[in-house]
Length: 110
Image 1 (tube, rainbow, N blue to C red):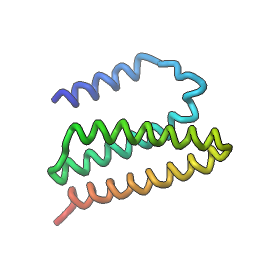
Image 2: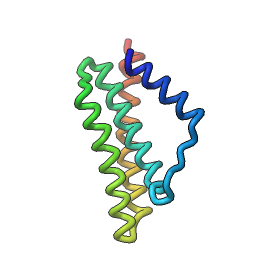
Image 3: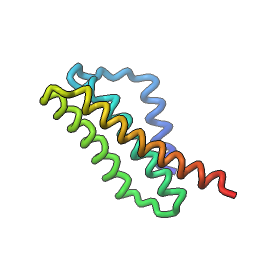
Image 4: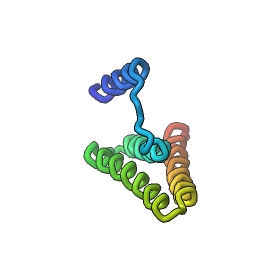
């Protein structure tokens, strides 16, 4: 129940408050959102498989976001930012589609 209240509260705050994202953070934000989406879908898959653990979810969420941002930062420092960004998106995209596929199989099994 707390998660649903937090989600609703977050959506309402997001609608009415327009946070200013620092310029230096803007290139990393899309990658961080995709990494967070991967963690969320992984948590949904774990929930459907009946082995969800909230501690694992929090650690997965934070480590996905931080690792993706650090990889993109490293790519920028090495001068290959777009290639590493593409690689991160491809890897996370594969994981996202894998999780969605598992969730779909669970929902529509029969």
